[in-house]
Amino acid sequence: MKLVKEAQVSEDLQYHLEENLALAENVFRAGSSKYFSMFNEVRALAQAGAIELNEDDSFFINETEIGEMGHYKGELVHLDFPIPEEGTLDEAEYQGKKVDLNKPKRGGSKKFYVYTRNPKSGNVVKVAFGAKSGGGNLAVKLKDPQARKNFATRHDCANKKDKTKPSYWSCRLPAYAKALGLSQTGARWW
Amino acid sequence: MVEFPFEEQNVGPNLFVRTFSPDTDPMEFVWHRDREDRCVHVLEGGGWKFQYEDDLPFELIKNLHIIIPMGMYHRVIPGPGELEILVEKL
Image 1 (tube, rainbow over the protein chains, first blue to last red):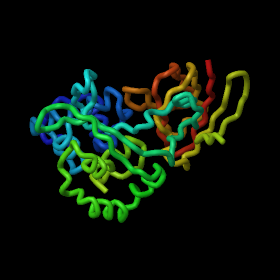
Image 2: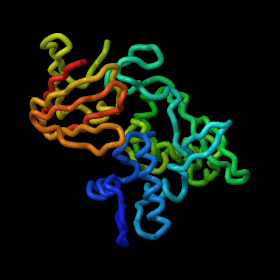
Image 3: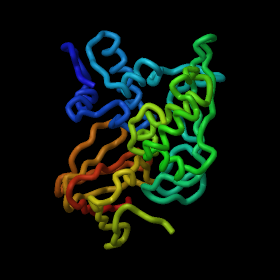
């Protein structure tokens, strides 16, 4: 992304611009307040025609509401941000179990859920999706362009437009992969 | 068996020297939290960076002291050289 008009930007966005970081490579921890602020700042600049986005960044800004919040069953939730079912990892302990330092749990279930707005009703819904096979397998598939292409063809990803369906999110998981610690890919779908 | 993305030597009560290799997969260095406050002294920076939650990364320069409060998310970002730090678990 790059500025195409003079605009006042935050120190955080300036860092992204200087380091040539895409939104998918958000320097802040996925799920942190500044992580979401970055999307909101870029969205405002895009709406003002002040920033040029690449295809991946354009997906986040124009196709999702990431950075926005909505109410789901009385709780304020982040929209269009996939959350691993296994939650976050601490250094020493996760849900009462000892876990490895600095090592994401691999090979376990890789199921996700996401809160998204149903465009017809305006209500926020929770959509569960993810690979039935293990996380290690998923990571391998994410890194393999041929596997991504096969998945996209098999699941007709180009025509999956309904954000309230698991298939939409499964197809677009690679866009979030880096933030979620799954792989380095920035491809929009499999 | 716990595997860490660094070598560690216990050099005193609650004192550890940790050495990080630039050859380690950067994906190993995930955001995480610790269960106690930590004081970190940089012995060799190696061009590595450190980042607290909701702050921008900064370079770990030789002799820099940082405090990592218990429960605060943080991470290291690999550099071209070897990073060596002295960690005190408070």
